[in-house]
Length: 404
Image (cartoon, rainbow, N blue to C red):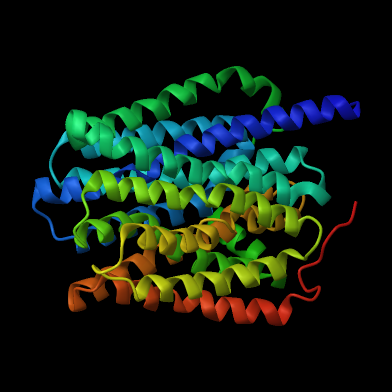
C-alpha cells in the first residue's frame, strides 16, 4: 500500500474512532453532568452518585477483561458499534423510571463505555506508525473532553427544556444513531477479525497475565488505576460540588465544560511530547504529580471563591487527570504481544476501572462522613502522587521505545 493510501486509511480510522469516543463520552458522563437535577427530583443524597459511578466501574472492569476475544471475533469496528448501542440502552433504562433501573443503567452503560476504548485502540494500533502512536492516540482521546464539553453544555440545557429524563433519552438516541452511521466502514476495518475465535472464561486470566508478566505494562496498569479513579471523581462530582457551593446547574455545567476544553489541546500536547521530546514514562510521571497538586488546589476552594477561580481549579484537573490517555494507551498498544492489542489495552484499563470503582466509593464515604467535597478531592489525589514518584524512578528507559 502506498504511503498516501496508508495515510488516508489512518485518517479515516482516526476520524471514525474520534467520533466514536466522543459519543461514548457523552453517553457515559451525561448522568453525572445532570446529577443535581436527578438527585433533587428523586430526593437522593449526593453520596449515592458515588455508588452509581462505582457500580458502572465494576461492570466496566468485567467487560474490559473479557472483551479481547470479542474484538478478535467480531472486529474492532463492530465492537465499537456494540459499545455505543449499550450506552444508548443504558441511558434509556435510567430515564425509564424507578431507582432500580439506575443500577441496570450503570451496568450496561459502564460495559459499553469500557469496551469502546480497547476497540478503538485495537483498530488504531493496526494503522498507526509506532513513532507517532502517542500523538495519534492522543488526538483520538481528545474526543473524551470533547464529549464532556458537549455533555456539559447541552446536558443542563436539555434538562431545562425536557427534564432530566428527556436529556438522558436524547443522549442515548445520539449514541445509537452514530453506531448505525459507522456501519459502512466495517468492511474496511474489520478485515482482521477471526470468526473462529470463541469467548472463554480463561480469557480473563489471560488478559491479566499479559499485563502482569510484563513490568512495563504492570506500571502502566497501576498508573491507570490512580489516573482513571481521579478522572472519574472529577467528572462525577465537580458539577455537583459547584452546585453545592451555591451556583446554578447551568453555570456549573458551563464552568465544567470550559475546564474540560483545556484537555483537548492538553492531550495533543502531551502526545506530541511523548512522541518526541520526552519518554512517555516521564510525561506520565509529571502528569501524575500535576494531578496531585491540582487536587490540593481544589481542596482549598470554597464558597468564597469566585466562579472563574473554581474554573481554574477545574482546568488544572482537566489538564492532567483528563489528559493522560493517549500517551498511556499508545504505550499499552505498542507493548502488547502481536494480535493482542485490544486485550492488553483492556487489561491495563481494567486496573483503571478498579480505580474508578474504589476511589469514587472512597470519595462517597468521605463525603458521607465529613460532608466536605474538598477533602475528598485531596485524599483521592494521594494515589496519583505515589504513582508520580514511582514513575519518575523508572522514567529513564524502563518503558522502552521503538524508534522508527
